[in-house]
Figure 1 (cartoon, rainbow over the protein chains, first blue to last red):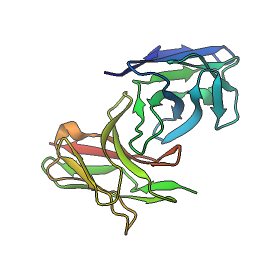
Figure 2: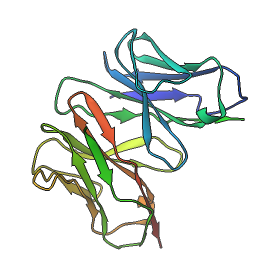
Figure 3: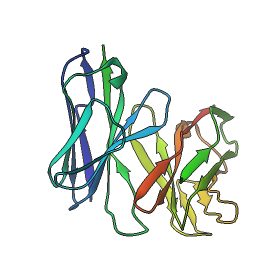
Amino acid sequence: SQTIHQWPATLVQPVGSPLSLECTVEGTSNPNLYWYRQAAGRGLQLLFYSVGIGQISSEVPQNLSASRPQDRQFILSSKKLLLSDSGFYLCAWSVGGSPQETQYFGPGTRLLVL
Amino acid sequence: GDSVTQMEGPVTLSEEAFLTINCTYTATGYPSLFWYVQYPGEGLQLLLKATKADDKGSNKGFEATYRKETTSFHLEKGSVQVSDSAVYFCALKSGNQFYFGTGTSLTVIP
């Protein structure tokens, strides 16, 4: 069966510090991968998605970036965090190409920027 | 463009009450429809889905029917429990994109 991992689970970082969040998927090949942010009490904001290694699409211009160095690894980064980067970051995967395509989410990383 | 609209929360119900959370959508073509549930501090879990008109998705006592004529996918449960307290998200897949509603918070009190 497929599983998705995110780490760290919780992170407290000062403003201006760098960020690296990692997401890995097991049990599937060539998944589509997604990064979402959820602000407190709010809905989901799609940040990035990737359909393959090295292929990243950005939905929202900001100080975050994403990379996909391996088939089942998706990394969210920042060189300098802002207060507004605080939130709950969710990684998701899907296998494309059919009407049955479904997104499955990881447990999330809670980021607090102080 | 494609979108999902779900009822504003929060919703508070007594245990064993009937639940309806409304969801309507706008989409070209024939989208797939989903309900996800998010428990406090956790990621979203797929609750149920339907991929074509008149399909009924069901899981854990929850159900929703894909109504193309009314572009709706309302979530229902006949008797809610305290453990159902969570945020519920309606979503659709249209083409290669997924679209999520803003979420409806449900609190069930004993």
